[in-house]
Length: 373
Image (cartoon, rainbow, N blue to C red):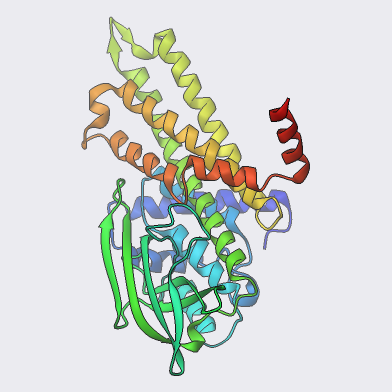
């Protein structure tokens, strides 16, 4: 375990380097099950799981470095959904029975649990959950319809948020292959594999996760997912910026590289600033994991990172010209990835509202006075 800031920085750099090598070796592969097995061998799946649960006891910051490498290569495998959202959520539950075996299998790459929380009528409202559990025999009947489940096509266990008869929120484990579970797989705008799932099945009582505060656990899990999505986007932004800079220096017009034109230089500088901002807010949010300020830091990362993603995506296409939207050039693929990332786990409006809601009481009071002035 990394004990100092210097050790942690060295570890993250080593992870990023090994991730880049692995992704380069697996370029073009879409066999996510095999890729997860390879990543399990590298020890990546247990990075954010405590040592007392069989993991490495590191954190979301180390996963964020891996996600940057995935983003830089535009590798859309759902590593964050499994290792950053699903597994750590499982690890917060009482470590016994199903939970113990599922965590061990997931860290080994043999099981892939993902959170199924978002519902069609909810928008980005995290507390809106219509999925319900009713007692039936010795178990619980789960009726749920979840949408845009990242990794849903490769997952073998869904961690489904649902309400108990008393209205309280909980999470129950539903095997993807059991009778009564239907999974409709589709591709997002960036080609990422998503799924809409429908469940009407009776599950054992032991499948309910013993969480101290299920709502808070889900909230933190979604924040981790949002942070990792922006870390992945930061990697994509870096590649797009580098590609655009190379194009400006190689494409000639009027007898000189177009990168010599001052207006394009200014736009490239704007892209560079946006990239630095995105990387900075992602790093700050990763370093705040486990603190009271984590949720607000993630909101900042989503808003600022999303703004940077939009600027870099648009400018990259604009400065490449018509070729920038062709399938043959990777710029168009990264463009779609950044469009998707901006809205993953919530859009700009949702995170601005979340930041405001999480603001300290003093800041809220000052803002109210300013508005009344």
